[in-house]
Amino acid sequence: MRKIIRIGTRESQLALWQATQVKDLLAQQDFESELVFIKSEGDIDLVTPLYEIGVQGIFTRSLDAALLNNRIDVAVHSLKDVPTQLPNGILQAAVLQRGPVNDLLVFKNKDAQEKYAVGDTRFTVATSSIRRKAQWLNRFSRSVIYNLRGNVNTRLRKLQDEKWDAAIFAQAGLERIGLRPSTSVVLEWMLPAPAQGAIVVVCRNDDTFSMKACRYFNHTETEICTKIERDFLRKLLGGCSTPISALAEFKNEKIFFKGNILSLDGSRKVEIEKSVDGQEANELGKLAAEELLRKGGEEIAEHFRHATK
Image (cartoon, rainbow, N blue to C red):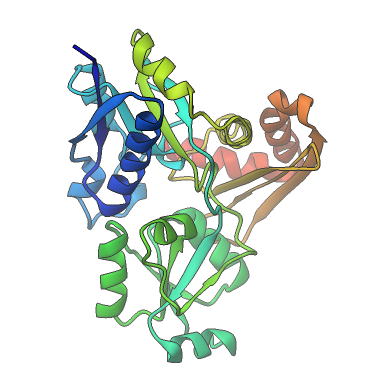
């Protein structure tokens, strides 16, 4: 009897899309699989701001527990939600080819879009991400920002129900499930979260069958770039509750890296840019973080270290 790989996933439309991609990729290599739905803490509490929940791993803990308890064989996550230190007994099996990395500003209506275009200081925006909030306030210091929680569908609905002008979403999330509104723009000036736009598959470290099955569709370039970004985040001791951004990209056999750290109110920002040959990628994230700390990022990072103790 052939082994059926049990794929753990959250129940949201986006999570289901991601898990289905993995199921299809396994099928292309003639592996049978099935989806197993697991509810996460982040899906249950849609009110409390993420930075008040002890957010590190909030969208991955339930799936990781199911994996370690042998209820599932692999778990599928948005890589940006995964803590930089995986739980004991769990390994990264594969990273899928990356999608769009940017953030989107989705307007409530055309009036709000025009309000943004003319730089109206009364413009209001919603997001639960302190990274997005800090970068927004760094650029628009007088904006009012509201907390917005829930899956993609819930947040789009709340945008229409509330009096906000716009909300910020990950471009990949909306486009993958065909929900990007026509009233939206790419925030090219906003640096994304480390590993944004990437999907990761994890498995138990003793499950060689699932590991080998998933390695067939691992995308090496995405794996390298997201490792650099997550190394940068880890060196700065950051998580979802820290305004740290990073992006590594291959261009003409070189890797170009940008990273930054901001204060919560956006008033202080320290940034770094580096480029190296592809074969020098292994230490890039760590070295970029060390340089950023020397340039003035240490003071901001130290504030967050004390805040989490």
